[in-house]
Length: 108
Image 1 (cartoon, one colour):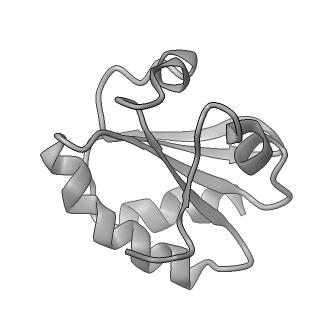
Image 2 (cartoon, rainbow, N blue to C red; image 1 turned 90 degrees about the vertical axis):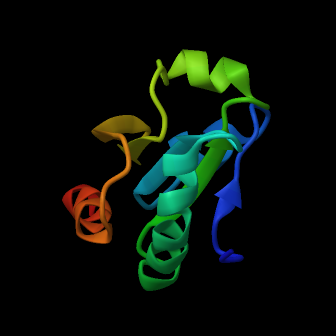
């Protein structure tokens, strides 16, 4: 697991994501979700590749249900990109690294 990935909580989500000065890809996931585990290594790679230009933040919706509800995370993995405090892009379900990178690129 990359040490560049931020694990956000309800207490620090706004600071890490909405107030970020760079685009943020947020992964809404849960420990029991197999597709979430499949994309985790890809997110680690992207966190390294986009260091300084974008951030990767993970939200465990089992632990932080209010955040899941706040952003309507009904199906996981659900990935949202945020730019300037606003949702910029959405991807529901596991996809490959090119699609994940494209989500980030569109927000840069």
